[in-house]
Image (cartoon, rainbow, N blue to C red; front, side, top):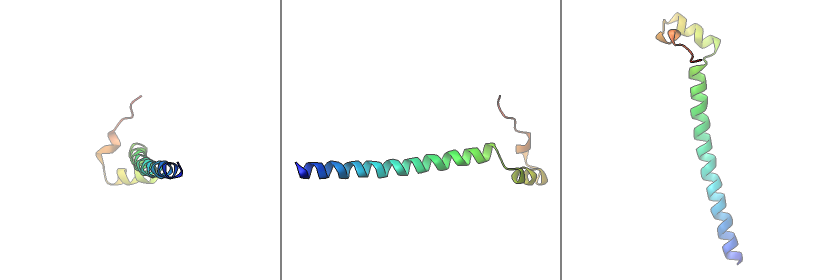
Length: 61
């Protein structure tokens, strides 16, 4: 019984580690999307100074 319990705990820890890795990947993707869709003022100034076509993108309402 104790051996089975130990295996179950280890399996659960492995699962949690896998989920933590997946969540970190999703977080990084979401942050990248957020930064792309809502650039900082400094990034907007840089876009204008470099004449980037992104300055004409519209936000969907």
